[in-house]
Image (tube, rainbow, N blue to C red; front, top):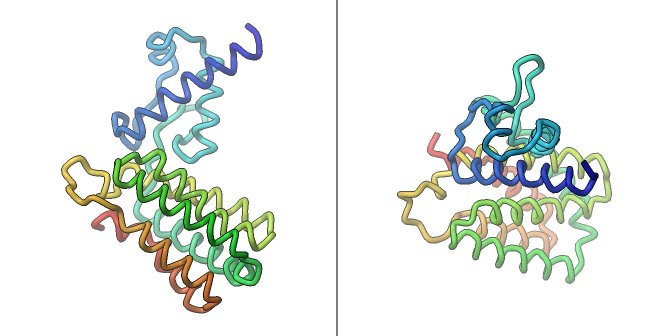
Length: 216
């Protein structure tokens, strides 16, 4: 098998599982059986395992030694810990970033919010989460600290699994047109632009508490 074909098969498996997760066809804790996926997609186990590794890196799948791969199923306590860690990292990064934000950065953040709002209106959760991640990382990266970047990306990926399965906005019977996040992001942009450091940090801490979207 060529490297190119192996990569395309991995991508096929990866996209198949990811779409099932985003469409809530696979629930938290669901076990991914290699033989079942192999038969369904007519692929060998190698690209399946490679796809599992990629999904695990993105926080969507848990790889458990001697047991296999499962759709991530974090507890309420874990989400609280992740939210707390996000609040610490993002507010610390913002303290530095606020002195390096340019008008061009503000414009790019505003463009992201417009795209996020459109994805929200369409209830396109995959696009919505991708833009949300870009928004937060764009701010963190202005602190110019590689560890902030790495930790923030990991925590944002881990947050996504909660939003996919538990964000009430994306429930099929929810009639709300726009999610709360775009307006909260606009407030963050205003504080960045005005240089209100303490208020910005407080807003990021509040914003990181994703459990407020889930009715817990």
